[in-house]
Length: 361
Image (tube, rainbow, N blue to C red; front, side, top):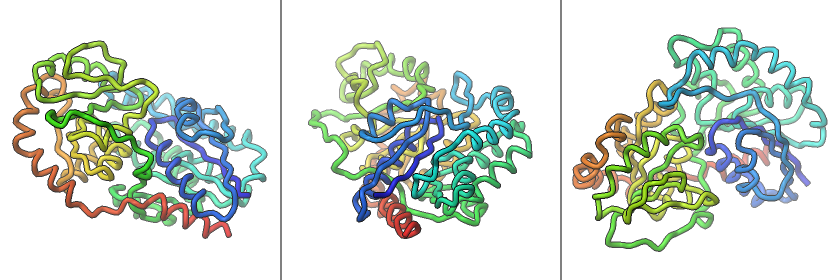
């Protein structure tokens, strides 16, 4: 039997889905039974739904970032949150006990996990498409002091390996001596839900972040979409506007499960969303976010690949109903073709699982 512990930062849902994809591959390729313990706090219930039977620890893992109403980083709150990070990090490490039972640790992306692995002589693996030291270094004016930034890097430097999927910023990969480039990490096709939709209509999925950062903008935007009768829009059911061309997805269903049945996804450029769209070959219209270095980097990379187009947050909120008809007749056709033809590798979960199992022999 192999036992491992997963440390998840308390930001978003994408890393939960990626870790589940890797767990499935570990189970597939391991000659031993795989048991996991997962530690997180903010999205623990979601993790339980996605992972299923296992052990769970409800504990904050030290990493999150604070946002303004428009989704941009709140620099003052970020600065305040990380002022005492050094002492919080030390306390976290001291309080973490009983790790001897684990054969390896995985972090996506909690820095202290790497130090714990080093302390207990347990192989420890990082998985991320960006690192928090990189993210915070892109904010201006700087919100994280140099001591904390150095601590981030020094802790991550103790990882056995850090796996970075396709589209990770090159400067991150070069920054870490223990970095390993891998394909995109996506779920198995059989895990997705294929819907029976009206073929005479264009089906568009609008996805917000796990923290509902764009909720106010989406609410304003969809008020103007009710007259686009040749399009069926799909949204989560936390909106109240009713129209024949708007369908709501039940709360207990993953938005990701709908991507493969769609003609277009309109979303913020979260990494899990874009990875799933690429895997499902579904074109993307990505919404910009002010001062978010991860989102901006993702949009640039995908536009360069010809796999996504971009709409500003202001245009999405106020003028999507005028933008869409023109976009669908023109640029959408190119995106659709490029998606159908791309040959981007999607087996990152396979690569990571096999490498981890090889490392812990």
